[in-house]
Length: 179
Image (cartoon, rainbow, N blue to C red; front, side):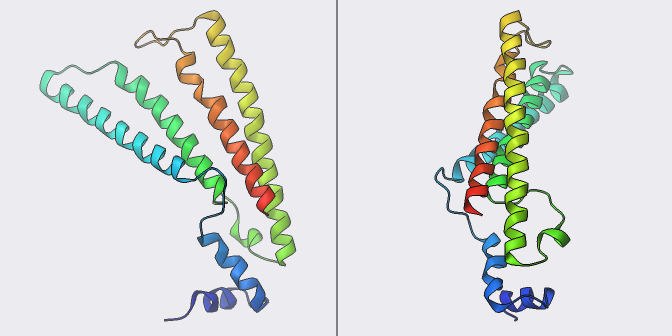
């Protein structure tokens, strides 16, 4: 069985032997101050909660021909929160969507610059999203908007968007610093 470094060298014929560990470093967990296990466990917990809630709604609908009105509303919020939490872990691990042809080609300096550029763009975008969603959450709080299905304040749902967007932006800044 060939060694992973042999595969990396074969895929990139111009790659020097010293560059091979840099390519393989993406498979290792990054050294971060805030543990990535937080996002991992929170994502798994949210997914489990979603599954239990949905299954309960299916069973109630099957046996009573009724449904819980609140499950759809809560499910949507949980899916959004779960997506943002998992995105934070993906950004910290430098696993966001990119075109590998460009991201993995070239000198180590070029790859480092691309990683820093991408991390800077992600940090800026999610910082802006945090600011704008905080304004929306504040407006929902001030005007007393309530949710359509269960009538709770809408800011209870939307408060997670600025907080998690800020977490993603901070994870992107961490990637930029490590690069």
